[in-house]
Image (tube, rainbow over all chains, first blue to last red; front, side):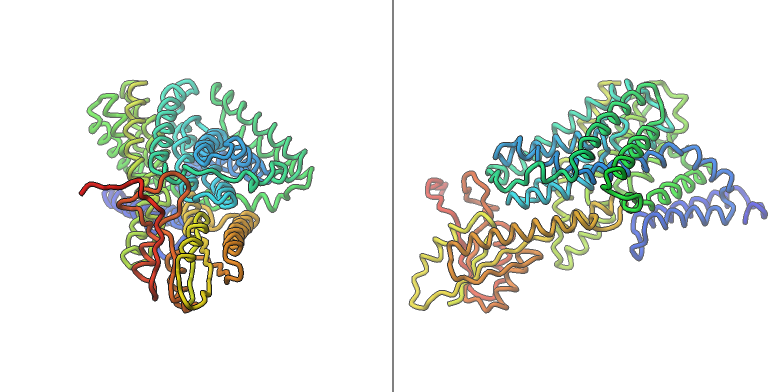
Length: 435
Length: 161
């Protein structure tokens, strides 16, 4: 609208900021239980209608980030098809068998399995597929459920920066600020091991009493029961192993990782259709299509704000706060990303951060790498502070509590508050040492 | 006398011993209750929300979770019935502490027998936090007398005076 009726720059900036802020508040609070995707698309739609961003700019923004969209698609399809083969169930049963009869060793194995799954198939697979499987397993074994559930949900994020593919957030960030595999691994692999170690150590300390027992191995389902179709299962194992290898090679030679994820998913889909283990419709049902709307909406909203210069001001402020040192860059980047990711979801925070950090090219390489690694680290690990959702969710749970409604989600928050700041600090210091 | 015994999967022998100690002239009518805690399931729902997924795991997984809960609850109650032949088994779902007190009222229990907390091995430590939140809630809200069964811990005495 305002494209045809020119308005002062200040008004345009104020209007864009207002729509942007309202969109972010909407995502935080989700009024009337609206889906986040509707809110993000709504915000983008208002900006387009008012002419605060041109359709051409919006389109070019979405096209520029094709790698992110396709990676989300490939990642979700790959996990869904691997689940259809019974891969996750089989791995969980093996983890339990390898534990002997010890509840504590099973706890450790859940952490290790969660790390492995997050590393190759992303944190979504651990949080959304492994968690219910572990719930079923420990329920059958008559072990205390909560420690194992917490282990799954926390390790999903804690192990999500071992590789670029371990979290879609990493793809969003490195699509804009390419990091070669060696730099990524050099800056984030060791911090990842450090925080995984802290996570496991603190959890063993917290749940030491509940983990002293043993379980009856006879209650364990057999590995064969977990596998739905032998040939498809073996095929899936081979494809997932190939995909893992291809991820490493593609990261090393800077090929788009979405192509690897999509190719893996297509291979699995062909196998699943051949052995009649799933249909195209069933696979499509397992993909959360609204995520694409959410990301698209966020990209457009943040692009419009970027045009007003506000995000670069935010970026300059972050650089100023860092004091122009690599230590400051890592600390400010980590704290900013971790706090932001708890206020809004980590996807919008990552989009805001990459827009804000657009102006760091003139800084030294150590500061640039410091900010990028810290943004990945903070956006990936930050959600562990409020694992069950954003701060808004936790505030809602607190209100419920005041109304005498007991909510176990608060237990997550207590554990998150205890362990996450420690992991953030230790991880950030390790990144700084490796710069 | 109607006695409602709360099972948690680890305490059937303790509860059995406690009821044997009840020397009463009236015959005991025993009810065994096991509550499947729905809290963890809600947490999984919240987690899906955070990852921007529709609520509830896919139907086959949901069914598998329900079956596991049901089988585990039945297993615990069967174990209880082995110790208390002829007892009435009451399988519930929800928040354990609230289900126990509500069932005690509905079932018209004269006494609720509950252990201080589920014990998964290790030493039964005395002191603060030795009574779990479920037992604490039941003691606070039960519609009848409550027998709180604590494990023997004589070896931890004397404590400082």
